[in-house]
Amino acid sequence: MAEIVLVHGIAQEQKSADTLEKEWLPDLAGGVRTAGGAGLADALWRSARPGRLESRMAFYGDVFLQKGAQGAAEDPAELTETQRELTDALALEWLRNARDRAPEPGDRRIARTVLHDIEGGDEGRQGRRSAGRAAVNGLARLKWFSRLGMGFAQRFVNKSLVQVTRYMTEPSVYEEVQQRIADLIGPETRILVGHSLGSVAAYEAALRLEGELPLLLTLGSPLGLRTLVHDRLEGEHQVPELVGRWVNLADKDDVIAAEPDLAKRFADPRGVLESDWTLDNGEDDPHSAQAYLTKRQTGQAVRETLEPR
Image: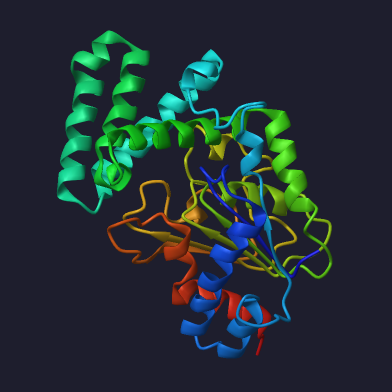
């Protein structure tokens, strides 16, 4: 069991819990240090010196690896028809987000053009499958996705769409991810941190808690995406009853994050949800876990939980 449980996001299948802990913990410690918690930061980063705090990564990337294969399933054609419809809807949602708030003017222009073709031009007349392919191709052209080349970008976009869809629609995948999180949560757990798809899994894990959790921290979260995520969540779309405080942080340029103010999506009768566009992660990769973890706002939420006044 751990005092801090971390849940990673999409496209991590070639890593492990150990490697992700080594990536996340220095970044989280850096955020805490920036927030004024030098002693707590030292306790968090185990590679710097033996830490007092047990922090563990709930790793589930390997769940998406094909059995007997070297790589991960990333071809939407391997999904059911219903799943493919959902991946298409998600691709369009991300493209609309890029149109409205991508940091690069060129990206916004690409998104506008592709969406115009899909919603009112040739792609719209050619049918849903053509529209879905056009949306994926449009996303892959965005600077954010295409930094390492078009081929990589298309694979990453497809992989991301497939992993989110499979988690939300396949009970075996969903339950395995939830079990891995639950295995690390105990009475001593004080903070549950989720990034990207991991924020969805962390939220749903919080709904299943048997004991109180002082802080749920979600970063770059797609929890507000209606069609594929929000409307398919367990529960009644409310702040988990045993969560003492829920802090949701998002960068305004993060097209993966959906609705900045989750109070519009989740009932909060106790007033414990804090959610808005609050971070500036830069233009290169506003969705990266590193950018979120190192921010003062992230560190402050952790510090206030572990060093209460």
